[in-house]
Image (cartoon, rainbow, N blue to C red; front, side, top):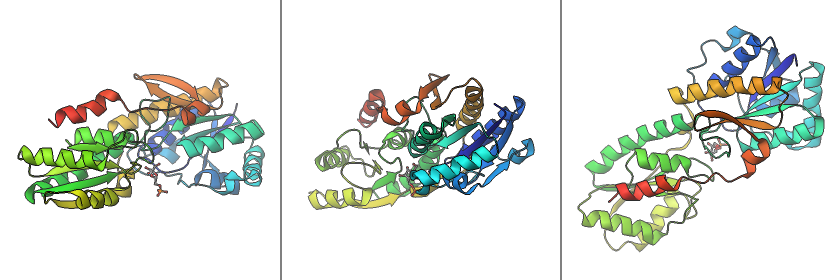
Length: 324
Ligand code: F6P
């Protein structure tokens, strides 16, 4: 293998740049030529592919977002789109690709490999931490820290006004961000899609808090919770409350996806980027690099996407215990 390419795809995540840097520098160190692809699968289809030298990744380690840009591509879902993408790689004699992204990215990569035999290694880059085969995905730690900063600020005002805040965090169908924010932010309750929390449970928690003379409360809602989004949940709670509580809602949204990556994300991204290059050179394909118990591991893309990554029971329990 002489030439490889790297791209970022799906929702951007802090640390993607650190990972691109590691792939580029790792590939050059191993004597490979390395290409960048802009705008994920769309750039592959359009041939937006360019050679990357070491200086192309200077001064990006600490930056949020992705210098390669990102996109969610509908055209890559078509066979015609994937054929165009393969031809662009073929013309440049690119023999392997590294895809940094989440489950949508890996699904596309899997089909591409099945159809054209292009070796592909996935690197988990998503704030959601929803992929099996790695304890953490690149961007998760930064997103939680960014959200915690906002939650701490909201707690100040919640406390001053004796208010209840429902704070919605991202995570798609996963409650990882919410759970970690709940523990780190000292929330009274965390609502996640993995476990059922009824509106009655919410009211009980709030009333119990008032009985213990708590004047304010923070409830973290994962965007994928089965009761709906934070606004819908707050409305249902207001309708069923017997005591009067002053309720507000805050949806943190895309601010969770930006910002300079934490040291954890930079180191994870650097390790996984190099591991991806080494895996391609060893002849691996259709695998995702991950870290379990701080050790590098590989799992198939199929497992990464389809196997369940449950929330840790002990962490779920911790929220309840610490709210005694
Ligand atoms: O997958 C990352 C993520 O931020 C999810 O947490 C969220 O549901 C989704 O992307 C938002 O996607 P978009 O940026 O397309 O609105």
